[in-house]
Image (cartoon, rainbow, N blue to C red):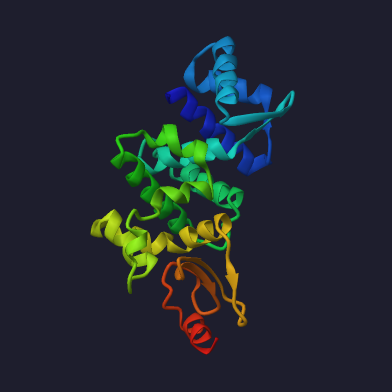
Length: 230
């Protein structure tokens, strides 16, 4: 695992500086920092390619995949990687890969922490589950089991209730990302004022409106006025 983490860190640094990875340099750097042989370095890089963490574009050109970025981000969140610069680069690259550039890095971290908490509650290893799910499909892990009992509550209320009050701050930070993921996965309704919403059994679970952007709080004032005047 140490060798794999080091490989990912080097790839991220090279992507940041050169927008590409030279295969020969990657082998040399790995052998320099770990004192392993070229043959072992080759096998480890081959393993990363097989597992889908990096991809070979051509003979001397490698890129880290979305799966690799998720794995690296999870290692950063769990403090298995303590290199702040590498972790920052990972979040920035993952944010771009997921088309979430309108959100800040803390929102991305909050979303990943919520996913980690949920998967761990099932007794599963987030590193084995989340990299393969990706975005937006991973949001389905966070959908509350009591969704059909919304009554007067919002999706935001239900999610905080299901994930527990200690995670309320994370839900608030990540709600925009969660709402966007749900709107990418599920059919939406567009209102006359341009607001878009996902509804289940006539109840709004995610919305994008002019006042709040992407949100799980259906108490958006513009959306409410639109509903009342239809």
